[in-house]
Image (cartoon, rainbow, N blue to C red; front, side, top):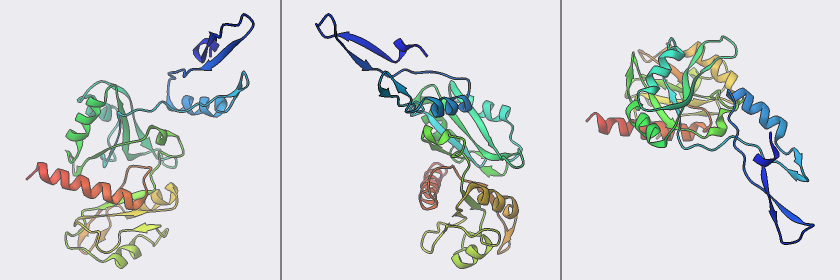
Amino acid sequence: MEEGALGQLENTGSENSCSFYLLPAFVTLLNGEQAQNAIQMFHQYSFRGKDLIVQLQPTDALLCITNLPASFTLEEFEELVRAYGNVERCFLVYSEVTGHSKGYGFVEYMKKDFAAKARLELLGKQLGASALFAQWMDVNLLATELIHSKCLCIDKLPSDYRDSEELLQFFSSIHKPVFCQDEGSYVGGFAVVEYSTAEHAEEVQQAADGMTINGSKVQVSFCAPGAPGRSTLAALIAAQRVVSLFFL
């Protein structure tokens, strides 16, 4: 990393003195893993008496696409998202246990306009038996330990299902959730549960996907990572209302 890329020297008028101003330097690496390694190595590293601040570059064009078919490949995901504009990067999230796709991925577009178009077009888009969900994401969630979701969406519930206690029992058989949809928050057809760890959420998802609740075979998928269960539920309810308006 060149010193000139980190700052500039400015003459203060004295022949023997000058002031040093740190300027931001932007570095593009090959992948997220290299970026995280660079952050660990250089963040708060002392440089000319100053502690460097190294972080991922903010972006306003990052989306998380959830509810993808389990068999969806990276190539298919790339084809899906590139239809809406030039892509900076995109990837699927895979289980660290099984190596299989977890049914969601991230895409960062070159421009926010492309991302906005993709979000609008992908929200509610049918892909096989699933309706996709797309939402804005914070780039700092792309850290390896943060991209694995702790929240699950239980879809295809009976439209009149309201039994919170029964739902809690169903989804506490392996691990007890820290949030399970409460009374008064049901909009019909889906619910959200949150677990204390991403590992617990994955174990429950694998066991519960396809289970029958009140005669309906439910689909259990991962929500976008980052937000707690209650906020995730609110986002899903808002998205459902948007989709309903488009398909009226």
